[in-house]
Structure formats: C-alpha cells, structure tokens
Image (tube, protein in one colour):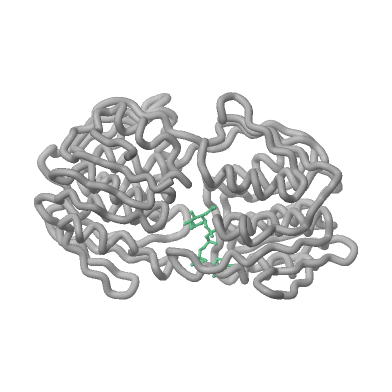
Length: 421
Ligand code: UD1
C-alpha cells in the first residue's frame, strides 16, 4: 500500500509520550533464541515492521516466535527442525538479519546467510563480523551473494582485537563466543546500551560475560543456555527523536520511561543549543530555555558514548532553524545525508562537502512534498514538518514504520496535526 504522512506544521507540542523498547536491542536479542533449546521471552518489545521481519527470518530457520500481551511480549523457542539458510528475500529487507550468523554457527556448526549488501546510508560491509567468527574457528566462503560458514568441531575461545568499533560485529561475536570452548577476549568492542542489554540477557541465561559497556569483554564459554525472561531496554534513539520534537515545536513535553543516562552527549548538545531536558523519577521533561530561539553548534557522530549517528538527521532538522551556522560531521557512515536535499526543499540552507554538512539557520521552514529515504532521514522530515509553515506530505513512509512505534498516535496525542493518508 502506498501510504503517506501528512503534517500541518506550526502546532506547539504539549503532552506526554511513552518511550518504547529499543528496536536495535530487540533485533539483537531475538537471534539469541537460536543459541538455546530453551525458551526466551522478551518484554517491552516495540511493534515495528523490522521486528516482524526478524520474526519471519527466525521462523524460516525453525524457531517458533509468538506474540503476546498486545505485541509487547514475544516468546521464542528453537524447534528440532533447523534450517541454516537465511534467504536473500528476507535479508535484503533488513541488515540486522546478519545477526543470525554467529548463533547458527555456534550452535549448529553451519550457516548460509545472504549478504545484506549496500543500503541507503552506505556500503555497510560485514568483514568485521566474519573476522570475529573466523577467529573463533568458523570458515567462510562467499558464493552467489551468500556467506557460507562452517565449523568443524566447535568454536574455540581466543583473543580478538577489532580494528574499529562495530555494534553488529560485537553482537555477533559475543553470541558465538558464549558457546565457544574456553575463554574469549574481545578488545575494541562497541559499548552501546544495546550491547549491554544483550549481555544482560545472555547472563540471565547462565553465560559468563564480563566487561559489557567497556572496551574489553571477556566471555567464558558454556554448553547450554537456560531459559529466561528479559525486558528490552528503552529506545534511546526514539527518546532523542521526541526530545527534538519537543524542542523544534517550542513545546513542553514529558517522555515517560525516558532516561537521560543513555544519551549524555546528545543531551549536552541540546543544552548547548538552548533546550532544557530535566530528569524526573519516571519521565523527562523537555522545554526550550529561550522560547524564541535555538543556538547553533558543531557536532560529529561517534560510537557510544559519543553523539549517535542515528540522531544526526533529527539534530540537523533542529539546527536548520537555529540562529547562526552549525556544522555536522558524519564519522560513522559515508552516505548519511540523504535527508539534506529533502530538508532543502523545505527551505533549509544546508551545504554538503563529503562527510561534512554546513547548516545556516533560517527563520522558517516551509511545508513541501518530500520523500523518505531511510529510517532516521524520514523522521527528520517529520520533525521539520512539525515546525514548517503549511503542509508537508512525506512519501515512502514504510521506512518510518521500521523503527517508530505508533508515531502518528504519539505525536498527535501532544497536539501535532499529523495523519496517515
Ligand atoms: C548498528 C545499528 C544502527 C546504527 C549503527 C551505528 C542495529 C540493528 N543497527 O548498525 O542503527 O546506525 O549500529 O551506531 O543495531 N563496518 C564495517 N565492517 C563491518 C561492520 C561495520 O566496515 O563488518 C562499518 C560500517 O560500514 C559503519 C561502521 O562500521 O561505517 C559502524 O557500523 P556498525 O556499528 O557495524 O553498525 P550496525 O551494527 O550495522
């Protein structure tokens, strides 16, 4: 179905928005079910098309995946009839599909997974995933667009130094190492809260993991993982997006379940541009310090705890109405400015040179028909539409449904004039 989002801009957002469980965490936790014959129950699961895609992929591998509790809970259990093939038709929809590779190899000694290929934000290779798994003893060939992996005997723990930080490669290697024989030491790993969430879930299944959230993780392999129930961590990227929604609309919103601690660098930048984010026991409150202006700033994206690449597009929407000139450098992905031409169509003044963008603030954005290109780029257009004069119509919104649960309901409950056409 060709759906669009319509926004009439200019409404000040006032109200309360609940923050969902993290998409990226959930997509990393679901493949954990492949590691065990016992069940894994996840709570606080966001209702998103990417979660559905992971469900379809796991089912195709022989895992039963059942929703309960109005979509907030999933129960996963690997069956006895296992397929080792992650088909291209599923993998091409979502890069996180590569996260089944480590678990399949660790538990069953074989896997055939389609290469995810490039995506809208860059080449996104999987060499670091393969490097980690190869060091543990897997052997790979690449044939006809598929990675074919085999393990003779079982994986063996070892020391792995990643040449640079990758969230996905860290997760894949951790999942494989929990079933490897002996000790695995991982250096230069991702410290993202989603990696900590993965390790907490694995620990509750009996795994021995130390150092989650630090530069070095040490894992002592075990033979079997127990059953567990785990609550998915809050979605810090969704939280950051709604913080910007409050700021850009000059609103006053509460974000329930929001936790500043997972977004420190981002919050510092918001304070710098004139947005106050206060932490209360069970929510955050967002308001501008000076209602008539946003200050300019300079940002570069980095692995956690630096400024997240997944909030770069949203921050650019906010800076496009700031006083003065801001600069953003995208250091994680080589092609993550797809939102720029669309923001420019809405009246923003942004120039790109390589991985750098110069944003000269304008007094007013204007509504326009625009096209969503990837998940975070699309939501930056929603944010721009909230403050633009007139009507914005966003095409290709399936990108938004991949990662923002009930976005129309959440924003309209705070007074935004937004609907799905
Ligand atoms: C995860 C997140 C994504 C986020 C990204 C960076 C999930 C499902 N997705 O993606 O939302 O934007 O972290 O915070 O959690 N790279 C290689 N070789 C590899 C792997 C990565 O060169 O084998 C490069 C990538 O091209 C990129 C950089 O490393 O330039 C970081 O990517 P990575 O951290 O792996 O991102 P993902 O895990 O794919």
